[in-house]
Length: 211
Image (cartoon, rainbow, N blue to C red; front, top):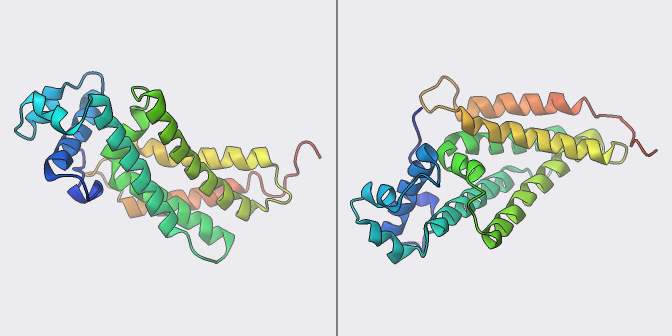
């Protein structure tokens, strides 16, 4: 499977060129070998540095992972929020949210794969920060679903289940997406948006179970 190469523009602007290069190398290494199996030599070797050079820019290998995961979640969240219309009908709102989320994960599937698959090695403090970022995605999608299914009458648990299901579909594509495949990010975004709208039919007009 071919991996995309994260652009230097993906990282925070205040980082040095060497730091950005190390992060790009680490993304590929973590995606291919996993965090635990990747050595500092693997990361630095791809950019022509010695293993010890990593510690000039990061205190630990875990900090490299955290910077990747934090940047990935922030960029995805920025893209998602920018795609949401200021007004408009609920269906358009959900479609744009889903399309933006899916397209981002396809375009940046290597970074996204690390963001989704390498959370366990994070320190408790770093994981807590990422958990807060992930919760914001859930809020956006729960709101989008609620708008379309009529939150005043829909079962809140159904709304949450549907929001999580839609999120899961978008996230799962990082497992199989190929840059040399037949599906473009835009094609997948439109397809998943259609799918999400159809999924809302399962909970429309259903009353809360406690009613």
